[in-house]
Amino acid sequence: MQLQEIVNILECKNHTDEGLLWRDIEYCYATDMMSDVLKACKIGSLLITGLVNQQVIQVAEIMDLKAILFVSGKEPASDVIEKANEKNLPMLTTEKQLFEACGILYTFGLRGKEIFQKTDDGTGNTL
Amino acid sequence: MEQEILYNKIFRIVGRDFANAGTVSVKIKKILKEIGIKPEVVYRVSICCYEAEMNVIMYARFAKMDFTITSDEVIIILEDEGPGIENIELAMKEGFSTATQEMRELGFGAGLGLPNIKNNSDEFKIESELLKGTKLYFKINLN
Image 1 (cartoon, chains in turn purple, brown):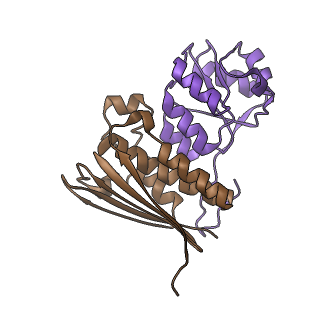
Image 2 (cartoon, rainbow over the protein chains, first blue to last red; image 1 turned 90 degrees about the vertical axis):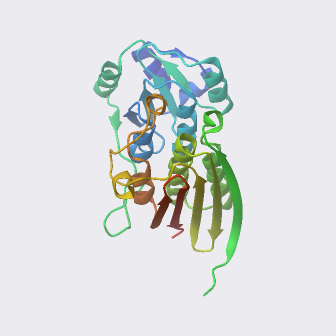
C-alpha cells in the first residue's frame, strides 16, 4: 500500500516531502519503545508510534524504516521534521489513537512481520 | 591463522549526549554498507551498536568503541566509564531495567538492550566493575 493511501485512510498530515508518498508499505510495526523496534521490527516497515523525538529518526536509519506515523495528534518538533527531511524519511501524523490507527490499517490489508531472528542452528530465516 | 584486519576505528561516545545519540551506530552502518557487507550482518551489527551506544548515553559518562572488521568478522569492544552493573545476570534478563522516567520517555528502558545485543551477536562477553565501568565485547561473523 502506498503511503499516500495511508494518508487518505487515516486523514494524516504529511510533514515531509510530498514526493516520498509514493513509497510502498508492506509491513507495519507499532510501539512506543525503541528497543522493541530494534528487537522485533521487520526491516523496512512503517513505524506507528506515539513517541515523538529525535531517537525515532536514528532508529529509522538503523532499521531502514520506510516511514513514521505519529498517532494521537502528536506533532514532531521542527528540528525532528528537518532531520527527517534530510534523511528522506516520510513523517505523518494522525489524530487517531494507536489502537485505532493500527486496526484501520489492518482492515485495509496491512500486516506486521517480525525481523530476522536467529534460529537454534544459527542460520536464521531471511530478512 | 592470523586474521587480516580490513578496517579499524575508535569512536568516542559521551554520556547524556542525547542530541547525538545513535550517530556512531549510523556511521558504522554506513561503513559496513560501503564495504559491501551483506545486509543481514549490517543490520545485526548496527542493532548491537545502537543498543550499546544508547546504554552509554543513558548510563555512563564516557566510552570508547573499538570497531574492527576482519576478513571473517566484525569485532566491537566497548569500554565505558560509568556506574557499572550491579548484577549482570539480572541485566541480561529481558524486561529488567533500571531506566529512569526520562529514559523511558525517550523510548528506552524496556529491558531489552543487553539481551538484544547478545541475541544478534555470535560471541558476547560482558564484564563490569561497580562505580568504574562496563566492558562489552561482541563479535558478529561475516558469513
